Amino acid sequence: MQKTSVVRIFATAQESDYESPWQATRPTSGTGSGVVVAPGMILTGAHVVADATFIQVQTSTHPDKFIARLAAVCHDSDLALLEVEDEDFRGETTVAALGDQLPDLQDKVSVVGFPVGGEEVSVTEGVVSRIELQRYAHSDRWLLAVTVDAAINNGNSGGPVFLDDEVVGIAFQSLDDAENIGEMVPTPLIQRFLEGAQTRVQVLVPGLGGTIQTLENASLRAALKMDAGQTGVRIRTVAAGNSVDGVLQVDDVLMSFDGYDIANNGTIRYDDNHRTGFLVLLGDHFVGDSVAATVLRDGKELSVTLVLKPLSPLVHRARYDHVPSYFVFAGLVFQPLSVNFLRTWTDWWDTAPKEFLAHYYMGEPTADRREVVALTQVLSDAVNVGYEDLYAETIKSVNGSVPRDLTHFAELVDGCGDHLELRMSSGALVVFDAAEARAQQTEILSRYRVPADRSDGLAKGASSDEPAQ
Image 1 (tube, helix red, strand yellow):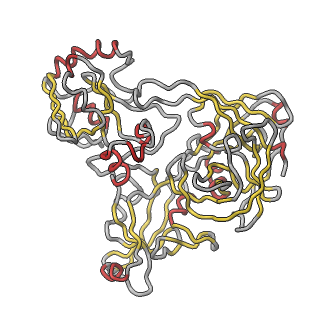
Image 2 (spheres, helix red, strand yellow):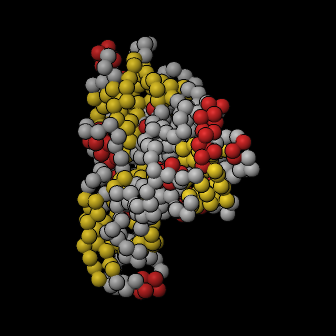
Image 3 (cartoon, rainbow, N blue to C red):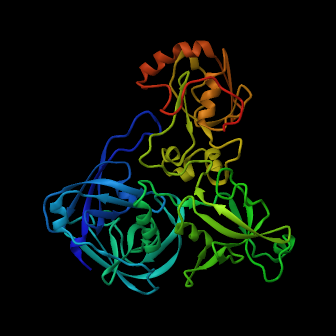
């Protein structure tokens, strides 16, 4: 283990304000750790530099800070690659060797970084206790992770985890309900990210889309016409626009994926050693890869190919380095429902509106609905008197048409003529004299210091009821 390969990261970040999506929140500062994986190149956690406006790094042997830039990021797997061009930095650091295999259970590893409370590099030892799918808090994705019984605190998150002299992981989160238990992004995801970073700035982990049901019940297997030796999972829903769309069907039994046989509880023997959920295989691929699968459909085995796409849920998962989309009409502020907006509630998973949570947990995109359009704020004006309490609900229709997404919603409003009628999810009815509302737009926007009635990308124009191509 070479401590001169470990650096401290200082990031100034400015997040978007999803309560007022035309503006940003105040800048904040934070620290993290990283490891040099090539001359001038630093591997760290994406959460360390998310929404960063300015990044500096510091070595353990030099008091000065060096300016860094974001070279590549994968928010899905919580990894980022920074570049420092200063030759002095390259002279102060050494390149760490990257491992090419997962550690074994009970392997002793070292978590290295700069935790808060001190200025010197810190080394904490632990033992690998679990290797399986885990939820990544930064992205809300379920990906392969390695659990170690070593503390991961503010400051050393994003730092390397060494097995002997090789980096076998990047520390990225700790478990809230356990003491001195942390998790690291393992080598398969690191290698895939670094490979993708050579050709693209934004690296994505593909998603399957839809939901599955395990088949541990014998009667359910019989109803799906499975033989005694057949195993797999039932396709419960198919999400439009995702990898499964047009290939798999509801009630298909997915028996194998990417060369791995799927057990009735949805697991595979990954890497011939670790039993975990079969979705772990998505981390081995890029968007655009083709993956072979076997399905049982009405008692017949079929070979199919899925072209992997980015995960596209009905409610947008957490977004970083992203400017929100919004649309303002008659003082009513609309935006797509997203986790970023849900996070404006403290303990949002418990306190956000139940309708929003139902869309988040159970909603699936369809050909007719790719986003949930929500009314998120009312900027009070004479034109919207009586509608002040209707925020935090969704739009069911615009003059009788169901909006597919925010872009379509804006088109419907722009093309509504002189009469606008919005039906809300609560059953409320919102009616405007559209000409009067348009006449008030400039005054409302000026009063509340909103720079434009819509975000970039929402072009003005008449609506069409024809589906988008």
